[in-house]
Amino acid sequence: MNDAATKVIPIRWEDENSEIVWLDNSKIPWKEVLVSSKDLERLIKAIQGLEIRGAPILGEAGAYGAAMIANNSPNSNSEIIKNMAQQGAALAAARPTAVNLSWGVKKIQDAVNIAVDNGLNPSEVKAAAIEAAKKIQEENIRATEKIGRHGMGLIHDGDVLLTVCNAGTLACDGIGTSTAPIRMAWAAGKEFEVLVTYTAPLYQGARLTAWELHKDGIPVRVITDNMAGHLMREKRAAAIWAGADRILGNRGAESGTVYNKIGTFGLALMAKALREEGINVQMNVAAPTSTIDPHTKTSDVKIEQRKPGEVESLFGAIKIVPDGVGVLNPAFDMTPPHLVSAIVTELGIAMQPYNITIPELLSKEGSMVKLP
Image 1 (cartoon, rainbow, N blue to C red):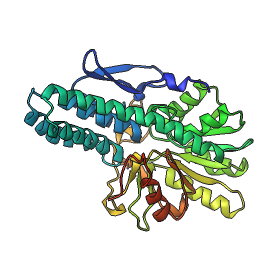
Image 2 (tube, rainbow, N blue to C red; image 1 turned 90 degrees about the horizontal axis):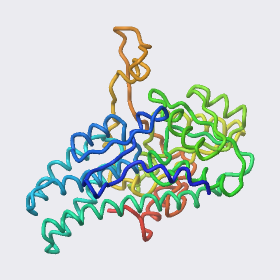
Image 3 (cartoon, rainbow, N blue to C red; image 1 turned 60 degrees about the vertical axis):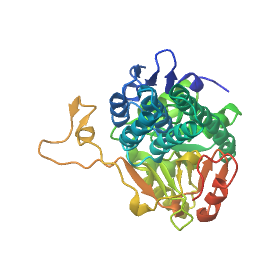
């Protein structure tokens, strides 16, 4: 398999300076800029400004950020725990819709509490926090490979595939989530076409997914968001591949509800309409089990509302909305489970009925989250 994707390291802990280093997603494809910091406020700014983005990477950022909080604390276990609670809450709340961010923070908080309960001294507790964060990243990378192996069988020679936003290496580490089956199928010799939607207003599909797949030598073409329905019908597309920022798994009728980049719901509706015309477009979602939320209902999920400026102008350079005209800018939307064909995870593929198949996945050994 072409390892170009694996050479991209979107985030890491730098031991020498005890700091976090990340690849600034907001600069790609124009420049590849590495940023380093040991300051929590700078990390939160990077998360909110989409320098660091994508659910699994937000999980890693949450884990490394929590480890940084511990590492920056005074050499007192009580101070470490206090800072982890107070500053960790601010970090976890930096972006509300993606569940992985708060999940990553909590994993390190749990690791710190266990280390303290086991009688470790403050230096050992800090080391345990950093080690736990590194293990989360290693687990994420392994999960992408497993997602690829499980999902590649859903891709066939001659398929036309469509992706939304970026759920590749930059967002998920390793070989990505929605890109993992694509990359593995291509490496196995399957031939197909990939269409990448712009994904307005910040063009993560055009800028990031196209950049990644092109680096790997996979044929990819960019389309605007409003071309998707026409081209899926014209080319008789086989599947949409999307990532996820949160998937509900609460055992009820809402299990399998997917929260992902704004526009995903519309694509899922188009796929359903095309299936009714006899064009069998599947709506596939790929995500690690850390993205499954077994605790929350749809009424409790907060859809992040981002700044109007992202819509009003093109990257702050060219204003496209007339002065005095308001805009709306929700970052995510909700796709109900009856529109989702398959949810591909590192532990296997869940299909309808999700209130049964998702709990079955989460009950398997190796699941990153547990049912309550």
